[in-house]
Image (cartoon, rainbow, N blue to C red):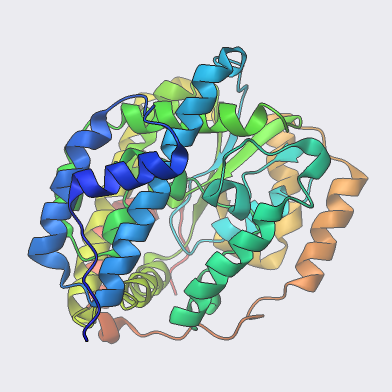
Amino acid sequence: MAPRWPSLEPNSIIRTAARKAKSDHFGDDGFLEALPVFLDMVDREAQLTWIGRVACRQSLTMALESRFGIYRHRARHPEIVGVPIDRPLFIVGFPRTGTTILFNLLAQDPANRAPLGWETQFPNPPPETATCATDTRIEKARRYFGQMDAMAPSLASIHEVGAELPQECMPILAHSMLSPQASIAFNVPSYQDWVDEQDAAPAYTYHRHFLEHLQSRHMKDRWVLKSPVHLATLDALLDEYPDARLIFTHRDPAKTIPSLASLVYTVRGIVTDAVDPKKVGPEQLEWWAKSLDHAMKVRDRHADKSDQFMDIQFEEVIADPVAALARAYEHFGIPWSDEAESRMRRFVADNPHGKHGAHRYELEDFGIELDLIRERFADYCRRYGITLD
């Protein structure tokens, strides 16, 4: 007998998530509008396999369960609401520009608080300082991320995720249904078009609520955060966190775009047999180019905040990522300690480039021409003095 196809009916997913969370607190209800839009586009465009439908339902249910649980906790503990998040440090550079290694290194500083994979995936109840290294959810998250590695063995060589590694902001923003995560995981370009037309403010309000939740029982001196998707909504980020400090990494787009297309192609291949690499390439090129255009315009509008930005070239990251961060600490007035440097250098030694295998890709694999990249990103490359290979 063929397996029953999982329901992707919005109310069914909401009821399941609410039952698991033992709560129907959901804060801003904008996702109630977004969820049926997304699922309609999934039916129209995504061409999911049975496993793909399972993954889609599971990911939505888990995200909403987390959201419901967070707002249940806020309702019971109003003292956590509005606790300051002062001068958070974000890495917002383009994908494949060294953002991950810099983020991993920032997490080595004992004074820095980064959201980890396990607590981002399973945030309820809030993590406790006394048990943050032994929480039973760590093993649960190891199994969860291990399933991803099993379904896409090449993923770790492209972008490693793990229970105890710092996790970027995109999965947090995904709980609002207003992040690119859904369109990266599933082939739903019309949904991303819809998201791009929405006000991103609710996503960043939720992001703050998520951080308030995590820091309520376990906090350090400062938050360190990261996601390239912030480029597309940098104005909303600065509206929510006007004192944010931002590291902006740069690299030749001819290297980043095909690598990014390869990542999206690999992730979508988990849930559909119909992913076309030659459609993924141009789609990703244009979306990320628009995101970068937006980020540059935001920086122009916020010229008065120029000291809150720091630009780091990919070549600096490759040469010595620890030294690059030491320069960033100096720029932002963050105390630099011998212990932080020692732990960072130990992480670099223990995690050499290519530890999980080589990530191989070619421009032509994804229907992208070098001349088009050079033309589309010419202003960006001139503005930031990008070294072109």
